Image (tube, rainbow, N blue to C red; front, side):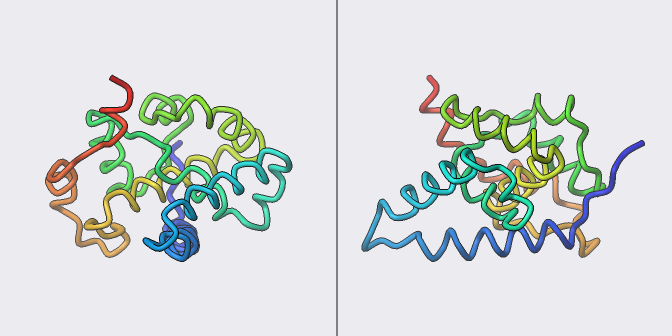
Length: 159
């Protein structure tokens, strides 16, 4: 049986993560965001149980580190549109993590597989800011908008 996405929780995670990301995304200190995300990664690796009290740290630590391949973006858009939390076996084939982030992903999964998947939903939504969270029910053209303007910086890095 499919598990429903808790859009209230997703929106809260997204808002909390985004406000932290934006506060460190300063043109005057261009490395501040990268340093902050690296610190979050180190803190969470040392104690993944912290995610229970600060779950927004996971999407912050993985910000700009998760790749959604073009063919998988359609699945993500569909899951979000239908409000379905993907199961692990489906999820793991639709995201790509940097090798350096695998220990954090494994630690986060050990703490809460659901939080890891929810964090990737948040990252998917943040990377597609022009798309609204489908909780509004006004999202029939979500899939069409999804492919429009797609650019993935990781495609160039991996080649």
